[in-house]
Image (tube, rainbow, N blue to C red; front, top):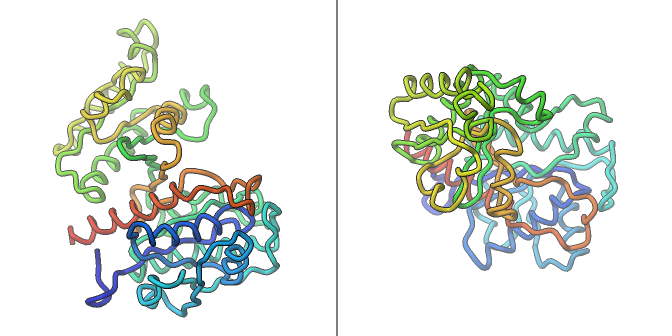
Length: 342
């Protein structure tokens, strides 16, 4: 990973996320976890008082250090949570969202992406946002992935979900199953497959990536008797990916019901899935607590915990930081591989 000086590391930037959700709590707990196991240095782009009040309310012994620049984070991280101020417009009440704070939420994301593009932080970890609040404030933000891609010059983003032992990419995402089948195309599989194959090399240090491609239909279509998508859409896509990324091994289409057991997972580095639940059900079954959302294809490193704002438990001290901790670790891993490749 890039160095600022002999004794400091370029930090990871955490966004504030929805202040009324569990983001503040898991951020504080992620810093506390550093006392038990060393973690990458990170700073938070948020309101310092939000973290002080949350720590006090939950009885978390986390000093908060207000900093003026990300370069100061490494110097205080061992003794306090570094916070680069992004002020809220009104006080936060756990579990009660406020449209008045929507612009601060967006400003935190903007600042994080700017710092990453400027090379002042090594990556961005986004805490969960409440999209309905942003829409209510008149801010057109469909989601972190699309918004950050636009800020990065319109790069094509690919959503990869992972946990220890499994990486999955759903070719179609937030669509009904019927709409996902209609939307599936050779071109979309090829585009995402190429980005995935290259990212496995550049971001995860895998010289010869092995990618399994899931079939859409039961028994991989049974030679067309249970559906022709494997023959007409998926198989041509596999051939195209293989021809464009010759260092990668692309296999499939394979029946999804046999792809995710323990011994099968040893034979590939990632699975290209055809729809949302095909990818997410095995991931969350294998390790529900440590799932991470990573955006591939961007010039900046971006990861996120694989859960939402959890407004129903905000302020109760019940939130688990494992997914955020894993997202921070993965952002640092990706940044390290990218830095070593340059």
